[in-house]
Image (cartoon, rainbow, N blue to C red; front, side, top):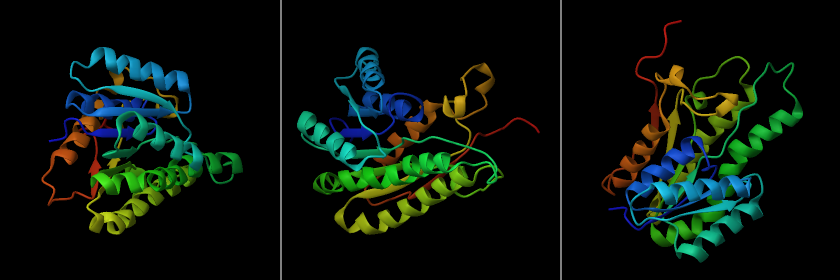
Length: 239
């Protein structure tokens, strides 16, 4: 039963994070979503509060996963507003792609700082609160965290790192009663990498599919832990 629990979702103003927030609120979970843009975070929370018919509430928080103090303040805001933290979803991420010959130092740092260090900062800021509730930490990795491709040096490094990091954290926290999983999606219909979702994305995983997967993890019997979940479109386009 996850009703009345509290979730913090980084990068939750759109895409996978927003889909997870919708799915959780439909189950009665209160949600805090973060974005680097305070306007985006609050607009998304307002939309959720308007459109979700349960008693669950959403709040929007301006926070940057690349800054540890910012993540600490986000967790503090959740604790101040809701009094507890049961679920932490490290979702915020970005992609910069190109051959190693052309990949800039700035792009490398942006990807690693957001996708990998940001996940570390998120759990580091929230771990004590999760231990109090015997909560759940979920990271959003990618199939790129196990399958490398040309032009993906920074993104592959970040997602391989997230996958390994999450599995190690799972071993660190299991004796505290904190469950830890990583979800590794393939192609998802989002705005990632300047995509504009449309009918041509119908073959892709949809954000509500990932939201349902998050709910399924949380509702699984406490004795069972799917620690690493690969998820991909059933039938991708023919090449």
